[in-house]
Image 1 (tube, rainbow, N blue to C red):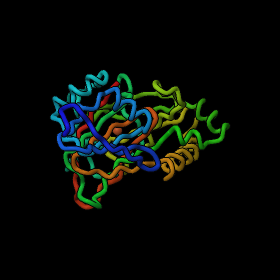
Image 2 (cartoon, rainbow, N blue to C red; image 1 turned 90 degrees about the horizontal axis):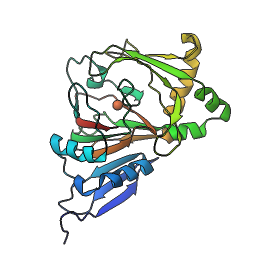
Image 3 (cartoon, helix red, strand yellow; image 1 turned 30 degrees about the vertical axis):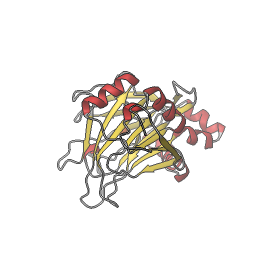
Image 4 (tube, helix red, strand yellow; image 1 turned 90 degrees about the vertical axis):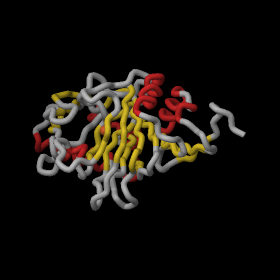
Amino acid sequence: MTTAGELRVDRTPLAPFGTLVTAQHDGADLRDIAPATLERWTIESKVVVLRGFPLLSREDLLTYCETWGEVLTWDFGAVLDLVVQEEPKNYLFSRTDVPFHWDGAFARAAPRYFLFQCVEAPVPGGGGETVFSDSTDVIRRASPELVREWAATEVSYRTEKLGYYGGETVSPLLTTHSETGETIMRYGEPLDPERYRNPVWVSVGGRSAEEAEPFMVDLRDRLHHPDVCYHHEWADGDIVAVDNQALLHGRNAFRGNSSRHLQRIQIL
Ligand SMILES: [Fe+2]
């Protein structure tokens, strides 16, 4: 018999990285996992998928995350509802794919972690998978010369504030993970204004657009290599914790008229 607060879970590796944590008894609750434990698992695995834990209310989710760290707030508050909109101002709420980026490029500080709750998953085959790219592995696979070139590169981003974020920002392409000391990559892929609403304009420091093109194509190929990417296919009730420093993330396009509702919260 399981008493309140006692937690039995199964932990299974995902490929090529990540861990699936499945509750092994009824009555399991996310709040039975100490935030310090969830943080350790997230650092170790980069992405943690929790199943068998009932979703928390927005208030309870916020309270839980506030015991983990400072929660990033925006105009809308702390919990973002990611839903498909029929006439979105911004591509995040459209049916298109979402190119790789890290969360918080335009925030006062980038969150160390973010957490999703899946209120409603797309129908099977409906797309909308979240894709994570392990930038630490991308760096490990690159030649020392290329890593030196990356380390000397700054990238600028500009977007109009039509959604909840926007402005201009500059970031070194490589930086250091605050918790592990590993070298990580901070990169947002450019968004073609023909395809995406509210695109992000990207310029690579010191390079003309023509010179930047092969540099960005090479980066794209490395970041999208199947060996460094975990594709998360959503199921109702999934709770997913993400290391926003080691990983970049994006989304596959939705297929047909499938929909999805995620709630996201970010931890500084
Ligand atoms: Fe994001």
